[in-house]
Image 1 (tube, rainbow, N blue to C red):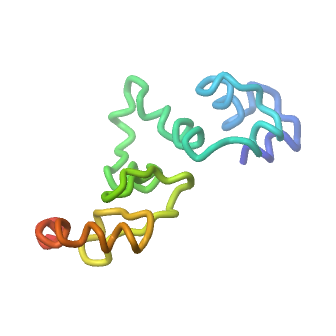
Image 2: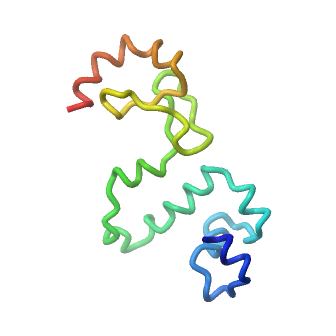
Length: 119
């Protein structure tokens, strides 16, 4: 959507997305900047309106917030570089891992918590 606003040279008053680059990230809204945004920056832009006064009326669920969040590996602590690149435990669907090796390494501790998280 921001690309559409760049392509059709929308003026500032008609922008719905590009102004967020300036308002939240303090970056000029250009195609090159859009191409270079990290997932963490996109996450910051997406979540910014939720921090504004009155945002409690937006009724954003915790699940919706988790869907746009970068996850952290439960074993090694590594943070995702892109949204939805880590996988979660198939039983509890709450614990994230960066790879099979970390999941195997953490299984002894996780298997005690997994049934409680799955409930």
